[in-house]
Amino acid sequence: IKPWGVIFVNLLKLIAVPLVFASLIKGVASLSDISKLSRIGGKTIVFYLVSTVIAVTIGLFLVNSVQPGNTFSEEKRMELKEKYASKAGVKIVAASNVKEDGPLQFVVDIVPSNFLSSASDNSNMLQVIFFAILFGISMIILPKEKTIYVKGFFDGVNDIILQIVDIIMLMAPYGVFALLGGLVVDFGGSTELFIALGMYSITVIIGLLIMILVMYPLLLRIFTKFKYVDFFK
Image 1 (tube, rainbow, N blue to C red):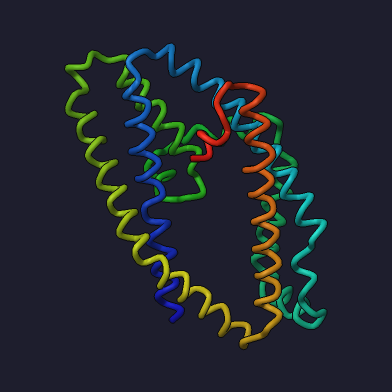
Image 2: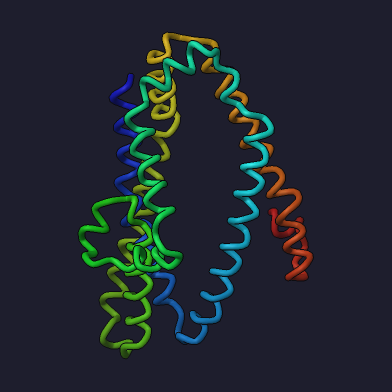
């Protein structure tokens, strides 16, 4: 069971970079006026940052209130800490390094020194996005006759990648089943795992419902005249 779960996860990772790269280039290149990109881009970035801060705040509040991990017994917690100590240590060191960096370090990190190297690592997605936007802007600036074939190429690539996504999604029920099956085996069929996953799922769903039923209607009411029912549909 476990190898099929790993294959499913790898397939999802496989399409991440080409999907983002092709769709962004297609989207940016479809704008005829670069000034439109500037206006849309600025508003999008601000909205993205504000909505992200709101979502993270809601998530932190809920997870600290519900604390789904507390459903594990003390023995199981110690066992998990020992099992994943090395992985946790790596993340702690990485977090410490980020804390020591300057406030503009994230801007430096966005700009890739080698695009092929960035594209080979899904953790460098922001660098891929930066290059894709830069690529698309350059296509807008150049005369259409010079980029017509390149635009057609990426339009085709985007459609192909979306078709691959459809194919992979057909495997989703089996892939998720395999992932959960492997997890259950690793935990020896412990009921604590199902309780913790259930509490975690409920926490996530509550957070999503708050965003969908409270935050989005509020944002629509403040910034637009768009009816929430139409937006939701």
